Length: 322
Image (cartoon, rainbow, N blue to C red; front, side, top):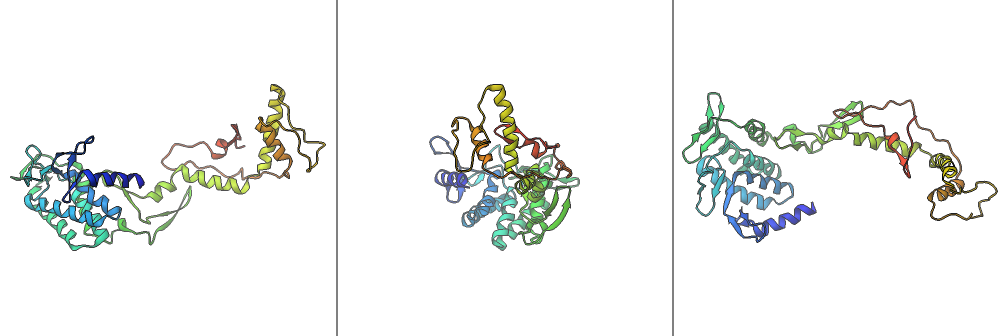
């Protein structure tokens, strides 16, 4: 969010003029093209998500005026000349304008946004509808059609229009309710809102992603590890490893007999294994117990992952689940 605010400040400083956003030289900040391109119409929707509703509404009013001028938004609109830019006068049924209207209506409930949506629906039906679908507009000035319909028209444009006029749709859930679903990865809360649209406006439930992720599995196994793992037993395993390795490398091991708790033995400060042995010597030995009978389920939609226990290590020593 801090990164966005930093970029947003730069955008407002160099690109914003009278509630339009123009193209500028990235090195000098000077305006290079005083145009509005239809793809930029997503920006008011993004502004609404960060709370900058006033700026978003002002820009959307400008874009709406372009739509009313032509019955569509051309790919490039010359702002000083108030006209569609030559060779960029088409409208391929893009969704960005109604996308912003949908988000802003969720934030404001301003009836102007419903009127904008109505203007879009009427223009699309009147200008672009054919016997076999909806055609892209080749020239917004003459309403000449092109022999194509982009996939994003059905995936995005119509979907955002539907959501604009359906305020009670499940997609708009504000988190006030959800459904418990029992899965192989445990109980999950689904349909609780917070949906994220991908670039083709397919809604993704983040709770479902989390429920089906290896991250959730690892978190649960880590919590189980915290409640059942005896660190003293791990140190005992490490002590055995250190003794064996010390025999091979000639490293002196810390003696664990003939000392009492008031004595501090002389340790080699450069050898962390001796310090771990000393720490273990001061602790009571306990028995490690974790449920070895429990089955490990690979996460849905992912390749089977290596069990968490077998990835757990101390100082590089792997402790494999048995």
